[in-house]
Image: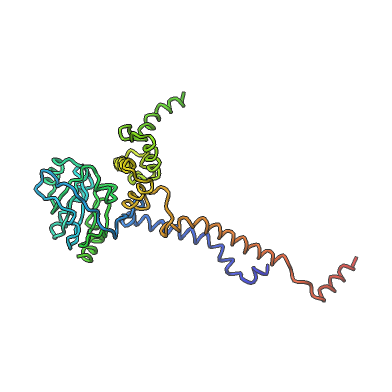
Length: 191
Length: 150
């Protein structure tokens, strides 16, 4: 009893602890749901293991039937930032992303395309129909380059700085919001 | 009867799950090693299956990569390291111990220690309460007087 008399306040406060815990959990859950809604939190998202490391050197053939040239591994450390974009004609989200790629190219951002596990004629038709934003294009028919990048789906986009270091990865289609909120600040920083 | 039906439905899927014979290595010892490695690697597409259990395209590509590296004579550790370098900690079904995953591993220990601390504090309190202060001479005299009464 003496303990209760000495400190009545903390003990009474202890009664509120479960309520406080539940409230904190509720706020956390609400923040998660809000993040999922506006796209800033993805519970299935996985951070790339390549951030801060040199971009894998791709030695891939150019995409057949398209006038766009291929690129050598050195193109990934050209002194200017580049975007490496994995895409495929069979990939539906790539269609959603394409206008953003076209807009980036129009603004002078260098886009290196990796056509992932695709058939060259179909990839060519896709570019004819939706426009070709790539300044260089290679074909990764076997998906080997994808594994080198830690790719787990298309589209995926990597920002490689002028020194050839991977700075950012976006898995899934980039939306106009992704570009303005995430990519633009990084492009400015690494320009 | 139901069990038989169940088995009939499941059997083809089980056969599919381990990969097609054409994908397997001719050397059974190497194939066994590749399967052991593959069972430790997460399929990044389905996330709760190992690459040995998954039919996703990416899992098949990774199975092939594991087998190529095993056939080329690499150690199990080197093969896992190769894939870990590209896909990060998440690809390992058994999370490694490093500073990022430390809270994950430490949490059960912390909860246990916290519980033990709570018990100790609580016991001390009850012990302090259980031992009352000795009686003063006046109290003792009064008690003696009360006891003397019929």
